[in-house]
Image (cartoon, rainbow, N blue to C red; front, side):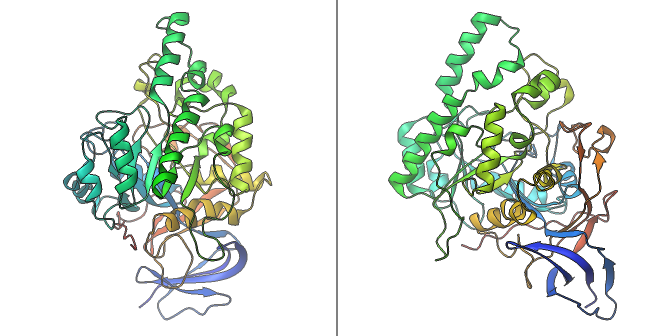
Length: 448
């Protein structure tokens, strides 16, 4: 069947950066190599030396559907994602209602069908009273089980020690955790309310949702995982202190053995620090909090040294009206999917890391960790989820933001790369300037 042939590309895949061509047809990659010949009817695209990467696999997004769709939904946020070169997403369960059983999980898959621009998977959430739903989860229906070991919305804070222990003992999939200790946060907030009353400056956010709160909760998660041999993935590491708790090394070693305990950070922890609160205020309020410049530097080093295994977004849109409220009322979270990849590639332009390592953290590792079938790599036979990147500077403008909330924390910032095109399942969905065609994201398959 006629397909698409991209020629003269700079391919970045599996630790290598090399000149070559790539062809795909019927949604899958057919050939990767040099000087490929077009088949009859093929569309030939001249890359002109631009990077061609596997599409970003984001294992941590909040697309707000169901129940919070005034600030984002599966259609709008996945559109922003593919505009940013993000072709696969895994969505969190703290929606309204929360995703706490198989029926709620299936409802989200049904809602995404035909509307998601990228490929999709949905987590099951854990609570103090859904242990039966956790232990009976079909591991092929979700990337993992999300455990909030810190403050969350609704009935999703798991703070019963016996339940927590049972979840780590019986989970049939990887457990992913949000690690912040709620009693520590509440005690800190009480102290700052004594000092400031109802007018707490947002600059205090990293002291309220403190490093101590993160470390205490992360230690507990690791203790439980080691006790039960659980596959544990700790999300959005924000402090230098937590890094000492994790081992450096590849996600999968030379013998093919995968790490049992892994760590992740997010793009905003690599681009912002405490000094940015004065300029951006609640716009960069998120949980866990963006902390010090020294933490930012330590996280970048840990990413390069394979202490941190995955780089994600924690995309969590809120309206500007919500963000304009006072410190305690303003919700935590940032819209990030549209500019996450180009923000990460700044580390390449700054000569802090390589394009191959960014691809490892953004595409290969999340696909491997969550057993995503036939995605996340430029491999023959795999789905053709691709992104073409042009190293041409641009400045982020509010009018270009596709997320429903209508703003970005990166507004006014310039990046050295831009997304020239994105393909999902072999179809171009972003041409560098606008969305193309209709949503054709597919439900993820987990090879378990």
